[in-house]
Amino acid sequence: MNLIRFNTSRLPEPFDHLGSFQREINRLFDSSLGALRDFNSADEWTPRLDLSHDDEKVVVALDAPGLSKEAFDISLEDSTLTISGERKQPELAEGESVVRRERFSGRFTRSVTLPPGIEADQVSADYSGGVLTVSLPKPEVVKPRRISIQ
Image (cartoon, rainbow, N blue to C red; front, side):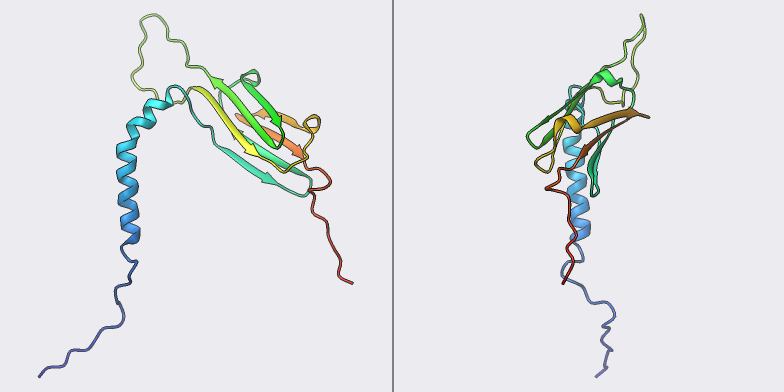
């Protein structure tokens, strides 16, 4: 009888194949839903945004290059900041046709829930370098307070 040494260096883990399974599912949805995403992109698009805060304010930065300041509508209702706007498709000259169009156009709306109590008259907005930055000062009740231990 021959004895074979048992190799414990690489035993299969129960979740080893989970990563490849997830990649396959993502690939399946990307390929089958891609047509729907392209179809909807002509009417509506979603610009990316960052939301950050410090002790004094909440800052929303929204990427929307190629727009004018007048293209945006910013509103604050209760605790919801809503930024909407529209990027129009450039007009084609006589006899000109599109070979490929990858830039998004159309209307967009982004809404962000904020801490309660932000005053609309204290909000400021700036649009430069294709980024809309909205600064919202935090109300006194939301600002963190340091508590010393006695």
